[in-house]
Length: 161
Length: 419
Image (cartoon, rainbow over all chains, first blue to last red; front, side, top):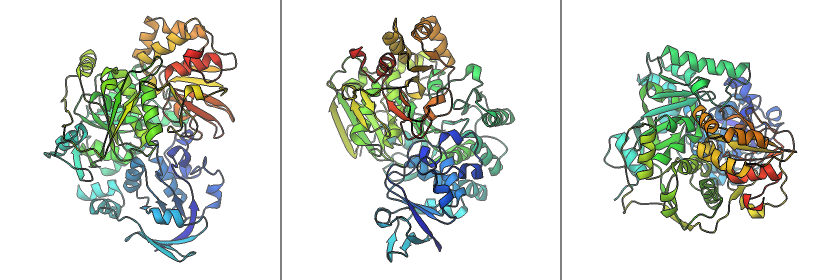
């Protein structure tokens, strides 16, 4: 069970907002994390705490294929991203690198900024401690659960090699 | 049940007779691509897998195009990592700057792409190759790493969308306008996770260059891929670039589409996508009094020789507005050479433009034309997100080549018709 605070963002949060291209001359997770969400909210990185959640609208992570985006969020300490929907490449990348993502339109709609959330990644249950609401995210197909359980695609490949 | 081109290509590469939307399948890939931003993390992940060789040293393409020629020390390190990796694993297709270009302009031009192939690239605009009847899609660095080791990748079979364009395009209306118009209609997630198949009489007349422009921006509607049925134009192009024939698939008449859009595009004007989404489109005539500081012509969307010819047609004998910078980025060295032969370089330089070496450069706010706070650029690129070309308080307006060239002369957004 993981507990943390919700940070709200809108629809179509693109990968340039998550990690601007001007910082992509490195792929070092810690360096990337320093600039996570910078063009959406330059102060966010100094306000957020390790273990917090991002809660966003439709099409989170649209745009570029840069894996640096989920890497930056994971390295910044984001425990999971809850959104109404995810853009295709971001969705793949998050699973492949082990950033938990939860697709749950109701939760993404109703959770307010600053709410305290408790999330069970195993069954996708999202508990809003502040509002006392409980939501259930779409479960991942078994095929993807295997990748997630292995800790990402590369670890899974290594274990089956 | 009939199958679409995209479904047929996926089925073939998964070793199945047919596939249906939602299925998870594992496919063989014909080509794996990476650039100087995405390949370095992929290389690190590849080394972690612990295999001794890549799946096929001729099918991996490494193109340093985003921050090259290396813009700073860190970028130089990234490119060096690619170069060393290519040497270590004897990867044939690494492109030094003397023979490079913007990856999605370069690969079709050197005959690396054929119809019926399945291609992945660690770059979202890998969908460009759908113009040749190829299923190509963007992935991240980890997928690239896994595919370099195994030659395989997993896919969810996408739902299918069909777009039918009828009528006749007006003067100065280009392929870019068709795709901006489409994204304006369906939104930046209107094709999220789906295939977009482009058809109709207007498409049949469209050049391969124009089809590459349209397929390139399928991702801006959230699509997995954009695709065109290969035809006589495709075959002529493949012959010209010595690509070989490939396998030509057609969608069955009873193929299932989630939705079919049909538009008569005779009356559409050149389109402009206002900040900060490619779907925020308006006809150019509705963009009044928008002063601009910069115009960028080029990129994987509009950096081909055909685009350069359109720009030259508008700029010939004219001068760029004195308060404005015009930056022209040819897609490849070959295109730059052709521009010299045709006298386009002279036209551009005399008009007051700068012509760069091939690079993604300012399109993603990398280098070679970054915007200051409060500045505006019109650009033939593909994204106008916040901070895309520089300062988070700058703005990007997307347009076709003719509008970007005309606007460079006027100093504000105009149609070439209004010059």
